[in-house]
Amino acid sequence: MTPEKKLNSLANRIGISTNLFLDEENVEELVRYLATHFPVVEVEIEGSVRAQSDEGRNLELARSLRKIAEDTGSTINIHAPYIRVDYILGREEDRAAARDTIIRSAEFAICAGAQVMTFHPGFRFPKNSAPEARSEALALIQELAYDLFHVNKHQGANLTYSLENSGNERPFLTLTHDENDELFSTSPLSLTLDMAHAASYCSTVAEAREEMKYFARYAANVHLADIKFPKHLHLPLGEGDFDYHDMILAIEETGYRGAYIVEEIGAGFKGEDYFNAAVRYRDELRSRYVA
Picture 1: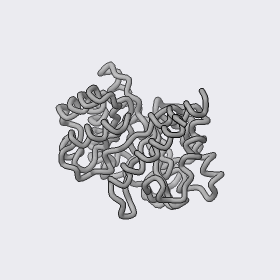
Picture 2 (picture 1 turned 90 degrees about the horizontal axis):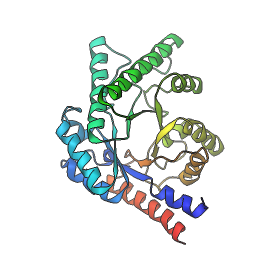
Picture 3 (picture 1 turned 180 degrees about the horizontal axis):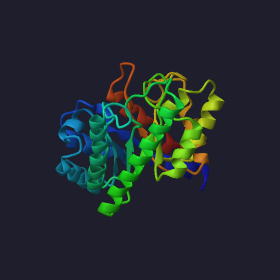
């Protein structure tokens, strides 16, 4: 494939998340609008979507999302709820409820015709936890992974389950490279590579580039944002100082050919800012192909 054709292929894999518009009340109208502009839409079950989907119980909404995908030709993937969804820490009844929420999200995603469902490694985890606690957390993620694949087997589906890597400056479980290697080699999970999260642990751009290539080996999905390197704050493309395009090229070097989803707002920007910046980047890639 020529460099120009590679850019066109990349342009056709830039996607967008509904979490840029968490308060939008008409979820179906929002998803249809996004799907007419981008080939991949990640529907995150938070904000209005979480309420209207009844945390994944409303399969009528899932069927509507499938119809939107069929009408527009866009792929609609799902991001499971993560706020207050903690299957690792807390009381057993709360952890069981959190597992049920993730399982329900998988059933919702299958009904919606999704190809990938992203979920988080719990909601909170102490940075100074003992090795035994980390081993137990890893075991709980593996256990949930197999429960999710039983959902696939039961429903005759082929949904890819993708665990998102956590970023610095947040109270979430961040796996070490050794823990990642163990998890992804001993369970049927893939990774959602959040580029901003990976970069937030790096001290140099060269290190960040190598981290992207490391994580890309396991990736089925990528979250894309600009940042003020290495600050963990998702910005619209072009509003930071991060060479996200070069990082994408590093990921592509590994053979990754999945979507790059622009998602998560911050620093006072609005969803429209992220949307417009993603459109500009996609169109720039296409213009290079035409030229």
